[in-house]
Length: 144
Image 1 (cartoon, helix red, strand yellow):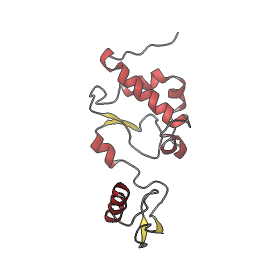
Image 2: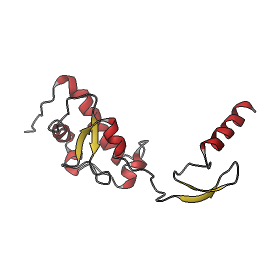
Image 3: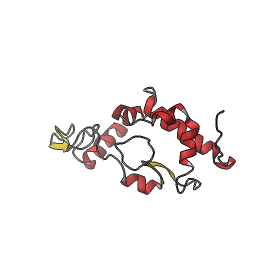
Image 4: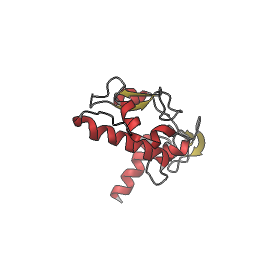
């Protein structure tokens, strides 16, 4: 007989959404955030994937689970959703615990598409050497 886990009614929807979204962003390539999670090898523990109610029950054992201002955070950003690697954290705590520049390491050398200055870009989509160049091109697009 399958065990049923008790989650207070006012938290049921929130906990189920956390579980659902964690599983989908790690295992469904059609999901918007798959590249940042499943594409990097971040997975949900097999037991929790097979039994999402166990995942929900585990989340309810962590300190702060009933505080609606907190959301689930992986302590080690390179490990998956596994026991011992999860916590409920504030958005400020999560901002500190992020992967800063994905895929580019220390940066890639390139030239600014506006002024031609050679610079090291830190983000994949960065095309301008400074905010001034970026705002200049934005101004030209809006007014011309």
